[in-house]
Structures are given as C-alpha cells and as structure tokens.
Length: 260
Ligand code: NAD
Image 1 (cartoon, rainbow, N blue to C red):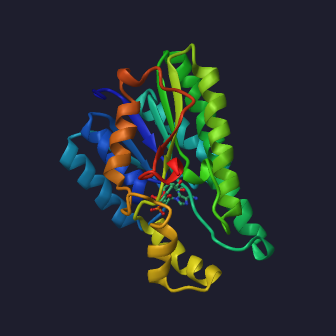
Image 2: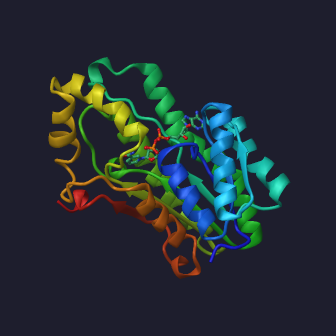
C-alpha cells in the first residue's frame, strides 16, 4: 500500500527505528535511514534492507542535536527524492537519575534530541506535505509521554512535550491530508533499554535481574517486551488511507501498562 511513498525515519540505524524502516520498506516505501554508528555497519544495514525489500534505501548522517542538520535531513531528501511523504521522528536517548543530581547537560541533550529535533524536521516536511496534499508524521513518544516514572524527569518532560507537538501539528494538517500521531511504546528490548538497566539498578539500589523483573516488566501486565515488528506494523498502518482520520492521537503499545 505504500508504493511510491518516500519515508524518512530518524534514528533508524538501531532498535525501533530500524524495525519501522523495515516494515515501511516491506510495505513498498522508499527509505531514508538516519542515525549514528560505524560507517561500515550502517552501509551493511542499508545494503541489506535495499536487497531484501527491493526498495531504494539511502542514508543521511544528520546529527539531530543540531537543528540545521535536522532540517537538512528533510531538505536534502526533498532534493534527492523529489518529495517526502512520511516522516517518522524516532531518534531518542534516555538518562536515568534522581532529580537532585540530574546532570544539566543530560537534561539539555534529551530536550534537544527527544523534542526539539522533531520541530526542526517537521517544519520543512510539513510544508512539503501540505503542498502535496498528503503526508504522514509519526512521532515516537512513549508511555512516558502519558504517565511518569521516577528518575526520568528529562525524558518524561520531553515525551509529554512531543505529544503536545503532535496534537498541534495534527490540527494544522487536519484539512490538508496531513496526519500526525504519536506512538507510545511500553518497554521494547533495544540497546536503549539495555543501557538503562545498569543506571536504574544503581538509582534504586537493586540488581539487574530485579530491574528487569520488578521495574521494567512489573509495569507491563503482558509480562513481555513489545517488539519492533509490532511497532513497525502500527506505523505502516498509520501510513495507509484507512488511517486518514486518525490524527492527533497518542497510541499506547504497552501490553496494558497505561490501562492500569
Ligand atoms: P536505540 O538506542 O536502539 O536507537 C536510537 C537511535 O537514535 C539510533 O539509531 C541512534 O543512532 C539514533 N540517535 C541517537 N542520537 C542521535 C543523534 N544525535 N542524531 C541522530 N540520531 C541519533 O533506541 P530505541 O529503543 O530504538 O528508541 C527509539 C525511540 O523509541 C526513542 O525515541 C525512544 O525514546 C522511544 N522509546 C523506546 C522504548 C524502549 O523501550 N526501547 C520505549 C518507549 C519509547
């Protein structure tokens, strides 16, 4: 259903972003990957995705902490592919610490990447989508865009902000064929979650195993991690015609977490 669509997925060299890129490519979209990492590994990922899906897959190395580079990710894609139909703002980082000792630089990085980068990519993308009369913007928020957990002040604040941005863009696009939604995953097993297990263990004074059992999966009634394939399937659906009335929504994919 996504043949001839051009999709940019930020932070797609790993984890959820790569899973979403794979699903959109399988559904027929051409893909622009973005994210950090070793050049040869990224090229291997790009080549594998292109070979297995038969789609045009390119890579743009914008560092999204820089607003100028974030905007260039979109304007360069417009120049190369002629259009941008789908923008998935997925790149994000986490840092876990009690508020008293939360480092200022971590606070700022999380606001810049998890919130402001989406402002910088949406601005040029929205203009192009509005001009074309069709567009899909998907922001990877989190259950932490809807509710909080202790020790994640910067992340929870940025993700709540991202849902606010999502609703605003939805209103501005509502009569122009442009939808904007947030996906709100519970815990997904990716490098981002692996990285915070040690920090959470330290902040709470418990072992790694106890973090997985009593902190991560304790919140998730399904007692299993969400998969990147499940998130990719939702993203692909949001890009179809059947989803044209879904806009301004923050959709939990959390095994029942926020239902409690
Ligand atoms: P991940 O660490 O596996 O991937 C993050 C991606 O962002 C990587 O491709 C990385 O290279 C890229 N990135 C990091 N800094 C960047 C920068 N400055 N410029 C460009 N790209 C950059 O993380 P993930 O778990 O796949 O998370 C993806 C998104 O999903 C994030 O926004 C995260 O907050 C959100 N999320 C994750 C979970 C989870 O449990 N993993 C849950 C809810 C929400």
